[in-house]
Length: 406
Image (tube, rainbow, N blue to C red; front, top):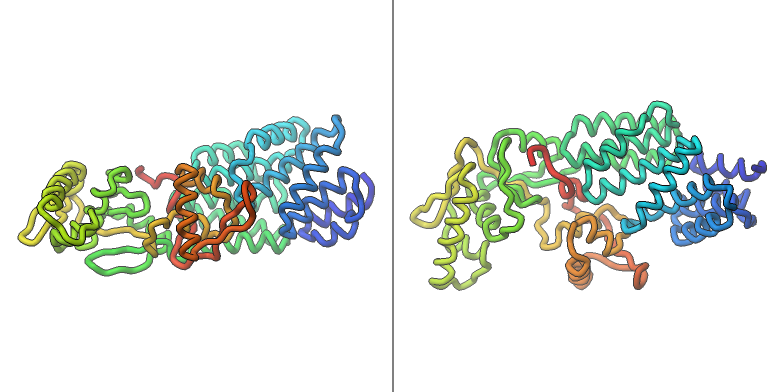
């Protein structure tokens, strides 16, 4: 490898893409194309970066399997940043295996980080944890250590293990300082801010207040009866009753939980559960049926008692009933929560992350775009959806993956 290629590679490793381009901008050989692609990615020109990396991968000879694998890993990182979660994960796995077979542990570790981050984004936390468990971060250079700790923190945050998350973020800060790369330091700082940002809303005894992630964790372990509007479950510290597929029952449970210890009028329940502005006898009959079903569903946690005006929730072993809700209630809140990270998402990636059909997600995006809440760029398969960070949305922290006790 000649001196200009070596100098450009060192500039990229130090977070200086312009310095790297100054050395290889006019060259068309395979190593220069690869370095130019990585530099353009660091500068934010992702389409140009992807094209250069693909040219570089084709230009490397059949004996340069390691170099081609590195190009594939760089392209996979661009796909992750651009939220193209449908990018073939098998190609990344094969590239990682090639690097491990040739002793390139540093870039193989980077490939593992990318695989884990993709799994975290789509809520497959156990697979991400197994991916990281096979990796010893001790011999890694500081940038790779920071990436490892960020992935560990991401898993802990989504599991509401805030002590473990803070410890991982502290280690990530130390590694970022040792790496002395401004972009990496900014990424760690951004990840750390979620620990001090309200992530949910507590509704108890007809009063509301925002909660930090640590407070959410404490609430779920407190023994209170929690009506969880994120996952549409009713739970205490030991039992979880899923109601995600029974929206009418969950609407009734949430209305009763918000009013506890008071009761809720029948007219209010009809409006909340059935959106009935003018209830007739058929609506009232249906309400009685659904209340009966709710009693059966919640029988291990609480009872639903009839009152003179309506119905009231009577907890069993819990002493308190609360509702855990998003900071902003929105019909398509889950879609907005993913878009609130400021990245550009494809509709197929959103469908994968939300475990929803592509048509359902596309319909939601079209309605949000009509309301001026999101915007798209590009056309066809290159179309991406984005929005500035939406105040009040927890940027997916409480969306993917099970909580303790699920």
